[in-house]
Image (cartoon, rainbow, N blue to C red; front, top):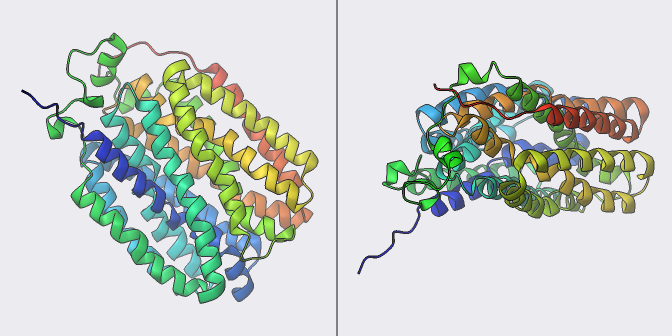
Length: 412
């Protein structure tokens, strides 16, 4: 009697989920510390917002290196290096006393940590393990970020009010980096082939020519860069990043403006991120069945309408309570489908490098989100105009998605 071998990809997916939940805290630490840092050091929102934008710009550039590392060295080593950067970055952050230190310790070192533990290595490694369930796997990995924000930002915010943000930063250095290092060393593996298995745990031959093409990719990075499809996705991802990064950066302090206490303001980050968990997983599942591009179009349209609603309506804390989870759902329907959709278009072998290209857009274009929102607030005394700008971003992203057409197969 033969025993069917358990597909190791599910263990890898679980480990990547944990890394994806705690690794991004290196970026969103400032979101949680925003009220405390502003009060203690007396810095303006645009000053702190600039550090968040700088973090995103550096993150996007290092994402190119992270994508190359995943494709050449493997996701396991890439994520292990990310764990080391997490440890260094959190410890340095606890010593900040001037803006230039914030820009270097948070903007540089913690950006390097995020680039090697966040979406590029986790999504790309996941895509190498799954084809038939690529959308679902991408949604699960994408939801990890939302789970981490929903759990840890309120926890960090509340404990900072009691113990001080510097102490919490030191504790976080070990609480977040050690699990990443252990999972990278003990659990994560680069491809199913390295474990003597095949994607999705199936045996050859696969049932459809589409799946067969996905296993034998026919596009190299140079040729993919010449296609309008890649650049339309680049624009879409970058414009979405403006809104998502701005909301993640300002949601806590926005809640304080509308009457929330600093200790309780982290709840709004939970309200923004918790509903997106279901949206990311559900969007991935629906993308596998009804088309990834179709779900991305629906997500962009929904997000645009929500932003227009927010621009017209939000004036109180109660209204923000309603707005945050609805926006979290809209922006999350499509976010986790970019890497799986790249795999459909160009093949899975180089999805790390190609997703890194999109991440440059997320960082370089999307990185302006926090500083744009900060400047608008400092100028207008309100986030209302920022919501209108965000609606325009989603409108342009929607048009870009509508222009994308299927690609013909091309040999590398």
